[in-house]
Length: 71
Image (cartoon, rainbow, N blue to C red; front, side, top):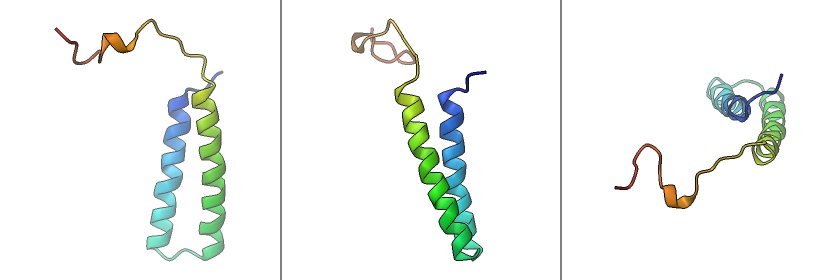
């Protein structure tokens, strides 16, 4: 089963929120530090997955935005 690039972005965002919550509640430094390291590695994986995603479209910049088409 192939995971969507959206999944990787959501998990990376959850790492960021988790670090903010841990700092707010004064969680021990080593736990916050290793969470940040894992989050950074996950973010690199996210960037790789998004850039290498096999996504194609027939839209061009001339099509503008799909939710606000030019008349």
